[in-house]
Amino acid sequence: MSALEFEKPVFELESKIKELQVFSSSKKIALEPELKKLTQKLEQMKADIYNNLTPWQRIQIARHPERPFTLDYIRMFTSDFVELHGDRQFADDMAIVAGFARINGTKVMLMGHQKGRDTKENVLRNFGCAHPEGYRKAMRLMKLAEKFALPIVVLIDTPGAYPGVGAEERGQAQAIAENLRDMVGLKTPIVATIIGEGGSGGALGIGIADRVCILQHAYYSVISPEGCASILWRNAIKAPLAAEALKITAENLRGFGIVDQIISEPLGGAHHDPVKTASDLKEVILKHIKELSSISGEELIEQRYNKFRKIGAFLETPA
Image (cartoon, rainbow, N blue to C red; front, side):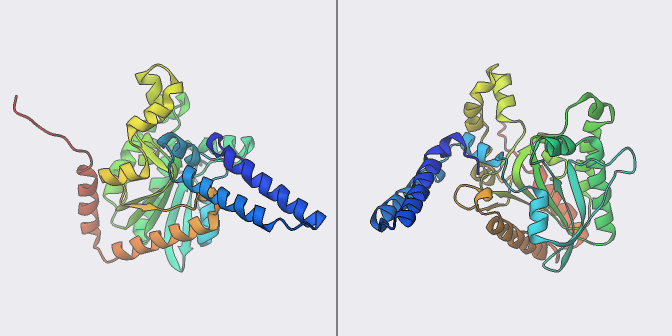
């Protein structure tokens, strides 16, 4: 497992413990007291580091290359997944995967951004940055879910919508705007979870949901810290400062009422125990689907509309 810069002391100590265990076993020398002390030191070091992460460090965890992606969660907590393709207008965008699935027997329409594990797959998936056809595919399938009265489950993980010339020529902004408009009016429950990066309109384009959850080390923001730093200070190196100022961590978002629930991650992040993370995520999704299933379509629309209209606060003072 690759280590982030601030994790290196943990990985170095783990390596030393393993070396000592091998030495103890091969030389048949009892080193249990020493190993116990080092193990205790390791656990304390992990707690000190991971319980006191800065916003920038948490963003690095959200971007970790070994973090579970949408297809990983689909494999871990769904069955009978049938992927559906294409927007019926231009092409099939591989940055968004979607299809029918069952979660513990509950039929859903599941969709989400998908990144790649290596260069070849990242090129195929466009690094999780969807084109307009990706958003049109997502909306086509959301309307299909509404037709069959299926809950919609969304997993968000993108640095942002693709900003290339081709995407703009094919109506990137319009595709996202239409999704925002049409998702509000769907008469079926929608549960969205930010599982990694939640970048700007790229995330919001499939994120208008009745319940918006977020994994503990994921983030959700109108702009990346690097982009913010480049605008404010003309220097992307100040991204850690921007991350602090943007207030984009899970706790900040919950405090602002932008997300409804934070899902805890294993110590160090979801990639340290993907199975546990998937199990916890599944239970939260099923809980919200159950709560929402008793609400009529008209009520869902009204509540969803009001939920997003009240985001943001301002104070008016007399002139």
